[in-house]
Length: 216
Image 1: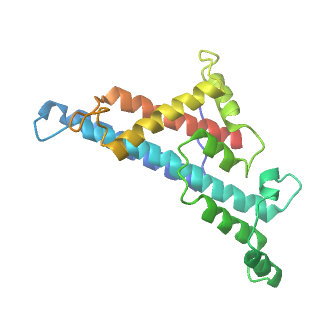
Image 2: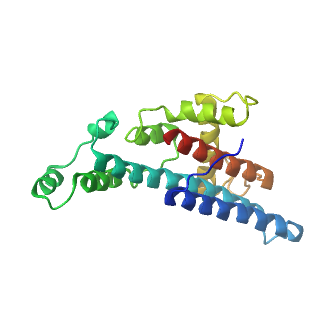
Image 3: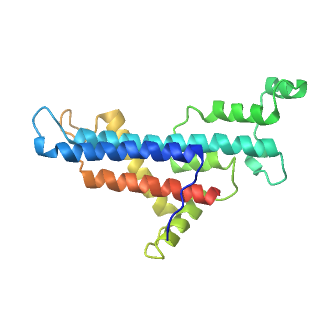
């Protein structure tokens, strides 16, 4: 089955950022033969890992903002409950009342303020954010979508998909916040290979596409 990629600006930006990660892997592979005491090829792979997680984190945010703006502008009966219950400060309500801003802009800006500095690298947080734009359990539906793409060769479920994503983001955090050091060591770093980071990048892209498909 051919997977169709969304043509939105947000997903195209995600694809570009994922390609940056893949290029870092290729750079590491091309320099592997020149390994030396002053050049750790693994650093290319670690950078690629961080870049890939950053790509999906950024996409989750941008996709959230776009869909919130579209739904708020429609102000229709099909709006998700969490968006209808989203609270606006009184000053924003007053701006809407006076006509100095639209309801859609006020809601969109407030969502950006609430979620802009929140890392969407945890399935629970991602699910909470996306409840503003869908009533679906995105992790359940995304797991099913992946199984459909593989024609049943995989038996992915919600918890398995979440565990896969958490494993990827936890390694990213060890790289970014702990210099990827082995627990208890101040100098020895965890091993990393091009195959491991390529698999992580592929999973990140697969998860993003599955969730984008669920969102429609």
